[in-house]
Amino acid sequence: MIPPARVAALLLLFPAAAAVRILRRHFRGDGVISAVLRLRGGHAGEAMDIVSPTTLDPVTPEDWDALRSNAHALLDASINRIRSSKEGRVWTPVPDFIKEALHAPLPRTATSCAELCARLESLLPYGVGNTHPRFFGWVHGSGSPSGVLSEVVTAAMNANCGGRDHVAIHVEKQVLEWARAMMGFPANSGALLVSGTSMATIIALKAARDIFLGFESSRKGGVAPAQKQHGMLVGYMAQGAHSCIKRAFDILGLGSEQLHMVPVKADFTMDVDALNALVAADRKAGLRPFVVIGTAGSVNVGAIDDLDAIANFCAAEHLWFHVDGAFGATAVLSPEISPRLKGMERASSIAFDFHKWLHVNYDCGCVLVRDQEAHLRAFSDRPDYLAANERGLAAGSPWPVDFGPELSRGFRALKVWSHFTEHGTEKLGAAITHNVEQASYLAQKVNTAPDLELLAPASLQIVVFRYVPLVGNELDLDALNDALVVELQERGIAAPSTTRINGKLAIRVNITNHRTRVEDLDMLMTEVQRIGAELAQRNAVNTGSPVG
Image: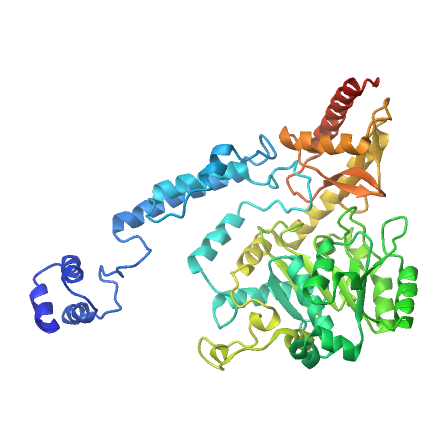
């Protein structure tokens, strides 16, 4: 075999790129390449037209230019899509040909950048519809155009935010400082960005569970032995609170049946007197109450519990006070709504989302835990290969992984930081206030319509009602209103959802959209009444019952 140095000397006669192609074709290993680079005055790590044979990057300058050109076109298409979000259909069903294309075999060969971008662009019209001003289903944020920009930077950096000392971690620390300040929590409280309120709830309740069962017992011995020693834990939330709390009890090994439902008052808020009676009865039965979940904006009607009264009760009874603030907690930025959230700042923990009423792109939620030490003890347990250091890349302890279950974490913080930096809390709070005013306007329209029935007061940003034909009350109103909602969705007019209020199926209109106008609400009412009458007439014909 010819010595590498000799081969390198001969290849000095060729341009660098040609020399490397010859080397890769006829030699294995990096020794010859390193020798060539040393003779040229470089080293093996330099980028002198040299790329790994297994690189996934574009290889030639032309390839990079093609990526740039296609990326610019795709960015334009994405921004155009957001710009036109108030036009056309709210929801468009995915065509069969796209569904079929998305059942293709596992790809074994490469696809060109142009073809890939064309496929990506083809998906843009078929989202859930939450960027449209007449998307009223569930509680979805509507995003903002500049959210695309932070996602581009996030993709370019590809940062793992489980820990270590790099700029993404410092951006997250900044966002968490803002979150604490926004919710009135101490500067030294525990905090973490997560996928959403569901994960935030699990993290908060795990800290509560471990405190009441003992960290050593709960984390090492398991929940069942710990409960034999310390007592069967039970928690409390109002009827109608979010189902993620029940799932958290299940996941944490407490059992969903150990989450006891507290009756609500006429305004759908927790009856604190009933809570007091439940806790006393459970203690008498040998159970161990440990947490009360107050709701800042219930899922069905947007009700806000008397958080201050619950905070007082939990302080007197030595219970953990958790606030489910998925969307409603962020209304603290509205000067008009903030007084109704009094007591939230006293909570032991809060779970809320940035991607709902604050319109940060999906996904990003947050958990705050007042007792940072408890938060740390509930999760921190790093193996040797994740050991911290005072210097270098492993500095910056504690890491995010010390506050939650995930080591692999995306750079969620950047889109929050970018969004708050661009708009500021005054503008975000004004959008929340406007939505609440719009809900009040819609509720008034429902109340004045003879063929509509308001099923609950508009407490925050949710309006629940149903269509009731003026004649033909023998019709199945639940089935009629369910069909009405489906028609609104499938015709692309609007996208409300349904729920049940006191046993009645309701059309549920949630307004958490900064693009929604009064005209959108007027159109919704007109179409509800028009389609409702159309369906009622059709049902009457089918059943032989007259409808006016």
